[in-house]
Every structure is written in structure tokens, then in C-alpha cells.
Image (cartoon, rainbow, N blue to C red; front, side):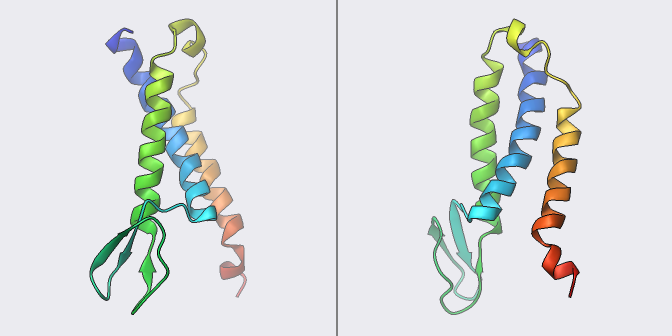
Length: 112
């Protein structure tokens, strides 16, 4: 593995994988941890709301970051012949598509 070649592959793959994993984490509530703001407590994995609303957003970010890091690390170890055709536009086009997917997921909030 050559460091100069693997860095762009890691960055492009991380950006695309993070956006996709974030949608999956939100849709299926795969939070790595839950924060309860009223009691100022963190809990591992998804916990139901207790005294106040539970905040899953931090957990979704952590889940997406860990998953995208693992996918990007594995991709950067692939031989250069298999990553040669990796399009750099995936770093911006995938998050753009994910934004459109979120508009579709949250469409009932826009229609009220």
C-alpha cells in the first residue's frame, strides 16, 4: 500500500460510505449511544426516553463514522487496479443524493 495513493481512496470512500450509513442509521435508529439531556446521561446503544426526550443524533453520527472508517480502511488496502476507477465525484454526489432521500423520508413534515 502506497500512502500517497491510499489517502484519496480513503477520503472518497469515507465520504460516500458515511452519507449512506447515516441514512441507514437514522432510518433504523442504529445509534451507538443515547444522550438524555434532562438527566445529562449517556447510555450505550438505543435507550427509550426517560424524563425528557432522548437524543440519538450523536449516536447516529458515531455509528456512521465508525462504519465509514472501517469501509474506507478496507477499501484503501485494495490493490490499485481495483480502485483505479473510483470516481472522485462520489465524495459530493452521494451526500447530494442522501439529502434528496432525507427530503423523501421527512416529506410528511413538509406537507403539514
